[in-house]
Image 1 (cartoon, rainbow, N blue to C red):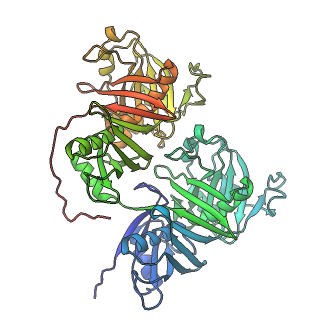
Image 2: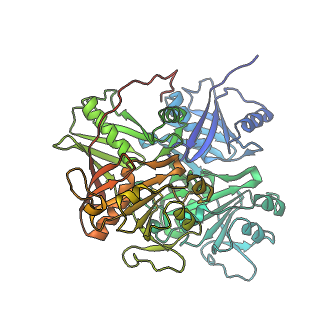
Image 3: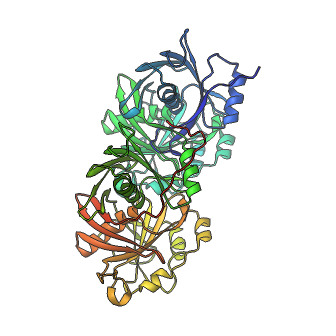
Length: 596
């Protein structure tokens, strides 16, 4: 007889959907044969599928102790952090398990998970042993810090399949119990360079059968997290970053690997002298964050998790505008009286970490359509707390983060921003992308990059007219063909007009604009955005530094539409003020929506 059992897919170690590491969790109350577990895992085809089973007479909602096993599509694994987090998320948040603490009996011993702050889960894992590796006559930089042994003859060739020739190797560490190899690389490596690494998994499997190494991590402690791109959306730097590859267990790359942090966390704790660490696993296009504490030979991992957000994406795709906003009241269901909301933004193809104009639109609806009674609203977002206020004229004032900026130097050219901003050498593909956007007759003055939103700001000739700026047409197909490895999510063209009146850059009351721009983001499904608040969080600080002005007036010159921005700069924040108009009022009908 066919039976149906609840199953879930959860993104672990992230607050962002379609980020972190997805795991399947199947709530089957009886133990199955291993062949059945493998068939189910193969069907899900995720890096791991978890199978918790209650121990004793209680059900999934009441039990505080479970057996727990994890399977890849090919084999069982002895420990999996992200699938444990996913399992805990399902039990606590989907099933409503009544306990504050749950114990899992596993191959790696008893694992304890607790409810953490903000709905996160805290997991108590074993700390793995560490040994440094010595290669022939090469000096071992970890001599005297960790015990050491001579590397097997095949190992260097395996490492060469994962680490590019141009990336220097600092040291190598091995954990015999977990069979994990940790390769420490150049601390000057940028996020773009780390995300660009491509392994030769076929050759790795030819060189080694997995008896000595089952997983391999590339890691380092960034020398300058800000300029290298290793800060989270709230500007907090990571203590260390990594990527993790495990072709020997059928996983070419894992997006978020708790078991690997049980090796890297203790290593970086020794090297940095810290017992609490913040880490990024930089899987391209996703990424996962870990809070790690070292306590009594145990590794305590804390991380958030999300269910898949098909409902939001379906709605955003149906509306098919650049962004759709989803505010949810916190602590009440009443939009009219609530002063604090969670807020998420979706394009028709993906979620975005920040959207200024959709935040303005949300505030406009709450204040002017719903009649929210508060003077100030707070939105909890991926980018941190955003505060909005009504001003005296009825406009909305947004308080957004100011992005870090780095100038870009192109090969054999002089960088006009040298000494004003820090700089780095342009990736090889970047100029080809810029040429798809900037017409040959338009002079490029400088380029600036904001690593956090992955936005490139291209400064063009200050004599460019409004007609010429609005006439720019980009080659979307060619742009998307050029591989940029996630380095870019948007490009802005901008200029400070030499003579705003003659060039056409004044508003309807003849007030001149301090700068003008256009913004293109085909990588997130938006060929061009008419008004982009988060892009002003990069361009505004740039023009403030260049002009020495703390208040700016800007035009985003989308042909036939355009957006107007008033910007102020206060304590590392960008205060945006802008008008908005309601053009459509309606209701949306959902067939059996999934609320959580």
